[in-house]
Length: 176
Image (tube, rainbow, N blue to C red; front, side, top):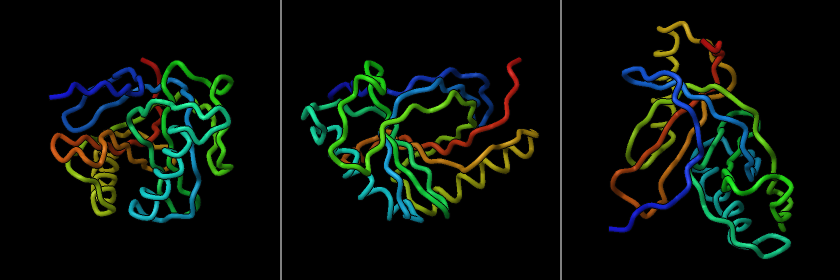
């Protein structure tokens, strides 16, 4: 059995509840594409292909960049996006320029999020169900959300067992 050596985006666990976690994600560098897609199905394939093209050498130096986890997806009614977190050795200044103008390199902001984990292959139905579940849990706890519920996918499509998916949403959180 191969050991998974995929670098994962770093975060600090702030609070662990029975069904969800509060996390702090420090700013990180991502490669992002924006899309008019309104569903997981519409965004996942084309978005992945554009971003994979960039990290597999579709850049000015033909440099191959390691895949990391998770893949971020923000699917909504205005502009949806998919982002690959860049390995921690990279930042905006030392990443090669993408050949595809749709691929944008940017730095995210520090953020506190609530995260709810689920397994299996994700679908639009799952994203809606778990977003609603997280929304209800946060409302019960009096936690204020900011912006859209987003999807994090951790596994390659060829991994059928032990899949990890998450719904996250930015929250208002005072350091305690």
